[in-house]
Image 1 (cartoon, rainbow, N blue to C red):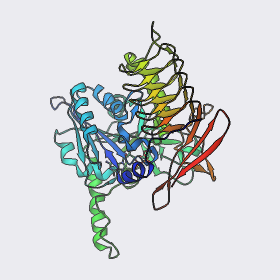
Image 2: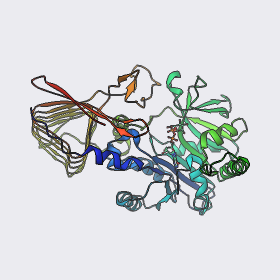
Image 3: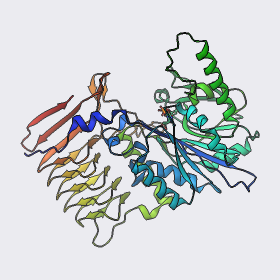
Amino acid sequence: MSNKKCYNWKSDILLPLSLSLSLSLSLSLSPSLSLSLSLFLSVCVTGTRFRPLSFEVPKPLFPVAGVPMLQHHIEACAKVPNMKEILLIGFYQPNEELNRFLSSAQQEFKIPVRYLQEYAALGTGGGVYHFRDQILSGSPQHFFLLNADVCSEFPLEDMLRFQKEHGDAQSFILLATTANRKQSLNYGCIVENEQTNEVLHYVEKPSTFVSDIINCGIYLFTPEIFQHIGAVFQKNQQDLMLDEQSNGWQRAEVIRLEQDIFTALAAQKKLYVYKTNRFWSQIKSAGSAIYASRLYLNQYHKTHTERLATNKEGGPKVIGNVYIHPTANIDPSAVLGPNVSIGTGVTIGAGVRVRESIILHGATLQDHSCVLNSIIGWDSTIGKWARVEGTPSDPNPNDPYAKIDSETLFRDGKLTPSITILGTSLSVYLSVYLSIYLSIYLSVYLSVCLSVVLCDVMSCIFICSFV
Ligand SMILES: Nc1nc2c(ncn2[C@@H]2O[C@H](COP(=O)(O)OP(=O)(O)O[C@H]3O[C@H](CO)[C@@H](O)[C@H](O)[C@@H]3O)[C@@H](O)[C@H]2O)c(=O)[nH]1
């Protein structure tokens, strides 16, 4: 067995720990229309559960079904008639990758797409409030706010229609879906008036069961929302002035939309819930990116058939939904799918098998290698006859309301089986069987621990830990 690892975990992992990104997106309809609409996307990328992949790109730009996660949001927004502007709000220091993404999105969708950087993490409400003048500059009558770390069919036009049908033009709409009782505790929970769909009670991540209707993190607001956020801001300021214990670190501007605003607005005939049974999932961990890819690839049958690979003379065998970037070089004897995304410049040799996996740009899968339930990092190499295999972390297929678990590395003291992730520029050589359980930080020192279990064909096993 040979095994060469070309990475420096100490510097690659520890240095970027302070990196975080959060974005929001706002869109406005043409002022010439009677309805003016703004769409606002809230994206936060601390990406800690996305490591090591978020070291290379901010989490919202990680490719899901072949395109950056955020592009799915932007495409959905761009379909809403007369969408005028998209704002991404976050506290991430913009870099070349983000700038490239913004300019290509602008060109493709012919809509201004701008990034507004918060001076600190201001929370889901504080960020939008801080940039309220920018959001309101086109005098929108409505705007959408979308969390970036969700994947969805984004039924934005349905939400607009629903709002019109629900009388008060000033009401705010939350998109919701149904979860099972246990998993509902991980989300914002909504109790509604079943006749009117008014939100009667809102509890963010309750400790005991409240409702199986959960907040999807996709909202339709009117500018009036800023009065409610503003009232919380002023109260925070007063409280801070009166608080002699205040150490000067707390900020009045940090406002949580869910706990500080929604809970207070419930039962005031302001907040309504629009329930969807179309696909929706959080994308918190790298494992959930494979699940989200499957959902979006499936949606491509309706929205982007051109992104789905087909079986062609001289091409690889394609099973189910597969995305292949046109620059990828794939041997015709390779078999790909279902649920496979192949990135830019990937090379795939003869007899390779890939299933339920994302292969990131520049990676090479040498002849007869096999990749299952895995993410292969940028510029990594999988050697001939090597096998990289993870454990799928899909929602329970027998429960229609099951959501993907945001896996923690350990549960009940045991390592949680999950997908395998190879970071950037790793090489797994000839005849290695690799199953990696990845992650993470131990304690306040933010130490990083990677456990790698390698067994070769001779059944020898060793474990490497980097702390
Ligand atoms: N701009 C900005 N965005 C932020 C900040 N903090 C978080 N966000 C963004 O706000 C969204 C919500 O993130 P979290 O605060 O981590 O909440 P959550 O655990 O994902 O729960 C939220 O989403 C669930 C649905 O996925 C909801 O069920 C839940 O009620 C809540 O809204 C994410 O897109 C995140 O990137 C911030 O300081 N600034």
